[in-house]
Length: 419
Image (cartoon, rainbow, N blue to C red):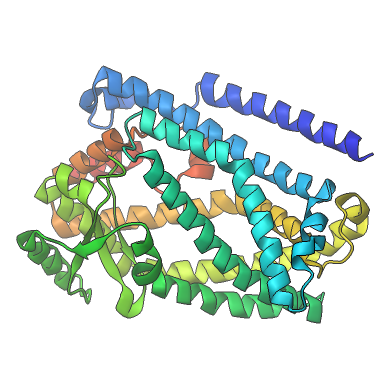
């Protein structure tokens, strides 16, 4: 029976891969609308023929990998359960110890290591693509170092979260999600607070902006927006990537305005000020707090759905999945599976909200800086640096794009300034 279900799952996955391949590589979705051809939003007007070709090719491969990798991850979780690996990790002689947190820590290490190894080829292929297309210039040892930091940071947080989570499930198998929701919210806010000063510096060096004249102009914009900022930070990303970025991170006294040095090197002063004004727009529009509210709602809803689905799945398929009890740690891959499916299913909605916020931030930046040409040229340079698709297929936009497409962003600037 297990073998039958396994073959069926693989066949279904194969059909899904074929459908997505045809949709991404051979459908007519996306592309440049005829009415906008030859305008400033058309890549052919600001990219070379080679850049246009590479951006189309690179985007298609990235999008296809995204839609393949997510359900593949689901199959990995199912395999871990059905094969008995999860039980084997729990029953390992390595975890025949008294303290529950040690048992869970060792179990989670074995599980995390297995998943890391299985998914490593996909991660490496993404790195290879990025480097092959000139987006990344990071050497393998540096990339591997970042991967290992990711592994240990995620592992440490997982041990804390899962230990508390399964203790709550053990205490009350029906209403654990309520207390879990109440604890996850302050924990997430705490992580947002320490992110800029504890976690981010593990990957890169952050230091005050060396161009003090530019910093003064940025802080002047911040003052106009009533943003309490005393410093602008830059981060050394040029040794890893050619892409451009800037962001506001953290909350409270640890909030920071951060510029990648690639942005400083490749954009003009007017373009940098537009980028900064965009990030300030998020602060002025209270997007951080809106994000906390949205996260709180989705966390509560997600944990409630997991609390309903896990017992039902275990009652119906527990013997095939080799799960004896919901509060046993070997059920955790099922928790991960449901979480991943719910996250994937909800991504069109969360991305829609994010795109709306990004549009508002763009509007604010254009009004604050009052240089539409700087906005257009910034979007064009971002497209070139990242070999981005200006108008992706609809499903790609729904599931992948947390920002409006470059076609929408550039066209909106043109429309707003022509009124």
